[in-house]
Length: 247
Image 1 (cartoon, helix red, strand yellow):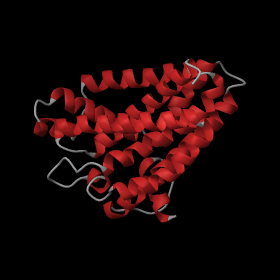
Image 2 (cartoon, one colour):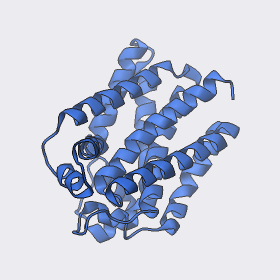
Image 3 (tube, helix red, strand yellow):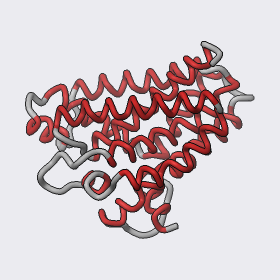
């Protein structure tokens, strides 16, 4: 229970008493998908509550705002820093330095606009029969794939940092522990589509992680956040495509 509460405290703005250190945070990673389920449940409740009263586009905008508020834009911040570092830094050292800069650059702003625009468009286009399922599994898979990315990576910086707890201190065993909840949930909700979605998510995440490691030699807290955000878009796109092809 302590590790679950630590994960909730770290990944959301939901009030949880106490403070945690890096060592304890590493033990919370297997609970990341459970936090995703909590976030997804909040989104589903809001969608079901508001949909009868407001136009779909407005509801989808409010869902995105809710997601940002619940997470404190935590992963979006990591995504923005990653975009800035990768596009402005000519070397690994420059990229890592830029990613630690508190200021935000033009490429990060453009990246955020594109990312949020894609999420909004995909949420709007997903058929209603898949809407609640999409809202539920999207944050679960995003945080599950963070565990995979961290498990197969080392920390990119020679000096310590927050992301070190989720790279050097976790391994495939932690990812396996993290897999029980999402696998049962996804297969229970999507059956054969769930198998396809899991396969796509794992392959996509491994390729994305390999690209990041090639650029900066490992993972950081920012790039783990970026993995979550990009995978969430991939999940929505995959569900939309499967619905369109009647898979």
